Length: 405
Image (cartoon, rainbow, N blue to C red; front, side):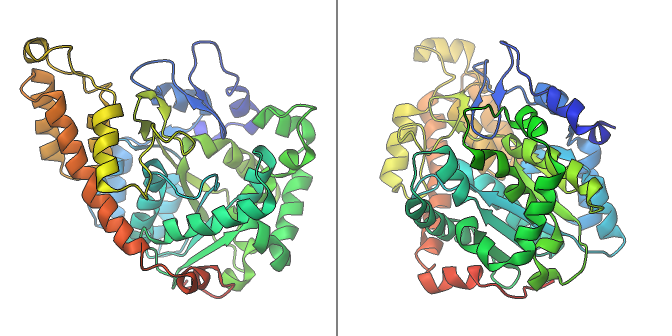
């Protein structure tokens, strides 16, 4: 199976050719106007496709309809998800781990995708969740001071909590504050660091001799939460398997983690990989917090959302109304339609919109209005929840404590 490849073999596949999409933890860009070729990426990374069989098994084990992120291939790839479903069938527990590298005061719409799905997983399986904020990573990779990174982490934590997570079974931490408070976490970091050579980390992440030494040691920090023994205040001495829902660009960290797990005699973390919400200007790039005109921020007003989609969302329509009526639009490149695949839950309605746009019955302006009318209520409801997340509420998630397990 692809999941059982040696890490060195998998990581050699990361060497990109000129015609390959660029996907790594710091850079994402596609060569085609339709965006990233995810089937090709699965082969390159050595993961497994989430196909109909996997989706049907999800529904059988949970007794719930699969989330539309699964049904539409937004979460499209996995590593060892069957091992997690086997645990559930056997009446055993696992925990969820995901995270965020805070690089701006406000997160954008694309950042919501893994967290929305993680909340669904947590609700469906009734399991604990650990969320890591890698503010130390941003200090190492960007021109950001420690104090600024901590501030962004706390602001992003409020953004994340507003998705609807429950403090009873959710623990959030930022590296710059937490690592010094938890000896077990640092001890696992050290065990991981001892298992990975400098040559391996260079091969995995592309580090070179001019990179600061903090970058070389950082991957162990992102790996450590995938082992339950890093959190004795939650799990005690229990060895509990982990499932990591994340965007596909984070996969290199967990290929390394899975290799280390075998050497530490710990369960390999299973993974579910998400595709990227594209930038407004086109599917070649993911939405980025650093480009105000390419992103819809979680703090944007309804007026700003309307303006951005109308002005900047790349269209798959034709040059004139007459030509569009004759030839129809291209949903493979149209950003408004792509956003509907992420945020419109109704499969039948989405199919009708696709058919109408591709036939020329539905015009680009009308499609943009549907996208605006779909995204705006989601943001409005989200912002109402965020307004209720006080400093005290945020700190309740950060408190080192026993959570429901």
